[in-house]
Image (cartoon, rainbow over all chains, first blue to last red; front, side, top):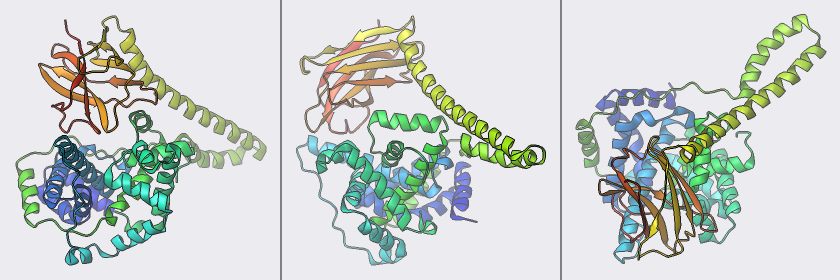
Length: 185
Length: 267
């Protein structure tokens, strides 16, 4: 069975209220989702809250998954990233309203056990990103981890909006080409 | 990669990163909802590429207690019972044609000349292309018609929101609201939010605010918002605009900035 078929079968069990299927999905995907969410919200406590929100959304709303628009793994990443960005924007907005500066990125020490568990794929993706043109990598990282719109990115980089759109497309296309399909989420 | 025009591929790439403005996002979603095979494929492929970015984050692990917290929370709530979506892929007209074409070609070769088959092939290709264009036009027309109906409805009310003492006197917002369909179209003019701020539209239902969305304008400060499912007309008292931190109010039921425009819809 392919990973996508296994994931679809798990998702159908989740849909029927099978908690053991949710536990299986949690074990399979949290090692990918948690580092992403922590990178966005920058605080372990908020990252855990965002991860819980994401899994509750999966538990309650698995019917919103449409396999024509991507694999189960890609959908889970999208759900977790969206929950994390919502939380980050809310925190940033609140701290601005209170006159505080935005929180600095977390500087937690690298977790050696987690590094080993993430295997080669993390290294391969970082290598692939380093092979993109700097502007392509920059727009992908800003959009993906900071959640800025392309208009906001164009303003920040002082680049034409159309150019930012092209860099985004070219960056995603190249990234996909550089990583063998069997290693995708 | 899909055979979409570069402009639409750019939209698909921005869409999977949730980095488009409102009008662009709607265009992509209307194509997806219409079953546009090219856009669906592009979104799927870009989404898989974007998901790879998750691996670029530095390795980290949550506390072991989180797993139990998630499963306890799940135990306390039943999932929604709708079925997991497993639609069969919609074939694009071109793809459908080719699938049909192989069977047709086998039969045709037995009975007609190669020249006749070539002519048939060309006609079918033209027909297929025309159907594709027609399908997309119908989808767009159907969406436009829905909003044109709001403006044409005999029950529609038109309201001009008033500027409050906290608002800029130049702000203009006109609303066409159809209580029957519970839809509204709001036209904004002269809305240029100060740096680091966004204007946000709110519904006031039974005295409580509910966020309807940020007002994303063009370079000249103009915007049109199409609002669906506004809810029970008896409860919908007014629309209001507030000036919020960039990205909008942190919670969808509590504006944090000053209310700059207000207009009653009821009575």
